[in-house]
Length: 77
Image (tube, rainbow, N blue to C red):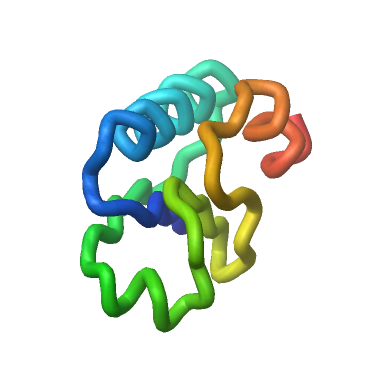
């Protein structure tokens, strides 16, 4: 499973990556978490607002930090 956080590295992007990592540990899901900072790649993926999160190729959220409850729903927990 691959989780991608898309954003240039702003505080919201870093917080998104942090909350995803913490939540995955809590629910016992192993996933590769990658931070994509290349602006061209972010735009090519159709992301207009960051942070954005893509899980296994599917955009889950864009333009805000996800809640723990949202992250749990993405993984069926």
